[in-house]
Amino acid sequence: MQKSVVTRFAPSPTGHLHIGGARTAIFNWLFSRHHGGKFILRIEDTDTQRSTEEYTKSILESLRWLGIDWDEGPYFQTQRLDLYRAYAERLYQSGWAYYCECSPEEVEQRRQEAFAKGLKPKYDGACRGKGLTPAPGRVLRFRCPQTGTTVVKDIIKGVLSFDNSELDDLVLIRSDGMPTYNFSVIVDDITMGITHVIRGDDHVNNTPKQVLLYQALGERIPEFAHVPLILGPDRKRLSKRHGATSVIAYREMGFLPEALFNYLVRLGWSYGDQEIFTKDELIEKFSLENVGSSASIFDMEKLRWLNGHYIRQKSPEELVEPLLPFLKVKGYPEKPRDYLGRAIQTLQPRCATLAEMADAIDFYMLDEVTYDPKAAEKIFTSEASVFLEEITGAISKNEGCFEEKALEELFRRMAEEHGVKLKVIAQAVRVALTGRTASPGLFEIMDILGKEVVINRLRKAVEYARKLHA
Image (cartoon, rainbow, N blue to C red; front, side, top):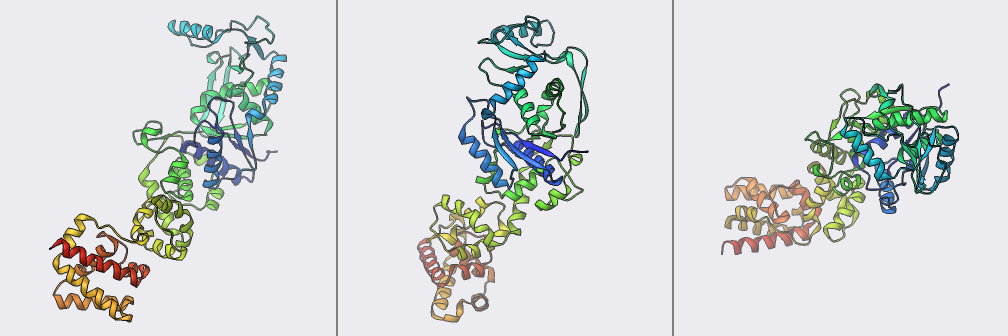
């Protein structure tokens, strides 16, 4: 009988959650949710010099922001040291592990000598037959089989074979008593009942060592699925030289969690030609068989397109809360939420990120607009100052002149009287109200800003235009 699916995500808190790690977490989460299984979060913090609480908090925050929850954890490896030592003792007592007194310098020297002779630069087994017992300065090594082949059936990569003679007698417990990565990982996966190990294919070379450890302990081996790496546009491994690489950075750039989640799933997994999925659809359709075996290229423009889609799909009210931090960074004065919602609605079709929206919303937020110098010089002609003054007067005197229909009639009548196209007058008003030549619908803007603000901005534009041509 097939045991229920248990997956895990096990980041090291030595940095913020990387895009590649986030995709691994998402794949594990979706796989467990698809099968009605369990998803466990484990923090691999045995690198005590580089692991920090700040990075742990950042990783948890990033996962929560992406909408990834966990059924157990977070477990911390530094709180499980007794468990690793107990398993190490099992291997030692059964003859699968031995103590080694070679210093790191000696081991490195022998590696270099082997390399110079064209041999595999691995530990030469100097202490294999010494029968050493525990003592300060000694490490515990795994007695790796020196013959035979270790075969791994990878769900994504297919059957992988490794010659045992090429493998090393890896260190299980360091001289300071801390477990190594390859050992602590398999102890955790055994004790947590992990059924499927889904991780980046940079771990492929660790897999035969881990499989041999499972066999030495007489434990069931989980199924492995190694996901190809994410590459930059230059087809090299995604790194800081390609721009932002952490989930936190993408949040700060104004991407929505749903968009980043959807994009990362599609970065290596496909379901026909469908590009956009709800979370429920992804849970229903996700399978490891549909994960590609070749590396994926991170495409910022595609992510921006997808994010723009999610921005347009949301109601303006839903975007108010996530936009607030961006408005705060800009130092804008506070505005009522209903006002922000109305302003956001006009900007949704025009913005791909929340950061762009925070830039574009400036004329709604600030008491005074700053004119684009080129736009002002081109649009604020002496003739335009006449139009602006007439419109200001008409709006000020006539209470009913601020309705959209009445405004449109006013603009058309004025255009006819002055023998100009409607857009000439509209563009002058647009620059007066927003400071630029491109904006949402003019009458929408006027309605949201309100009559008093519109009149004040028109008057200031008239003064500016007159000074420009004095």
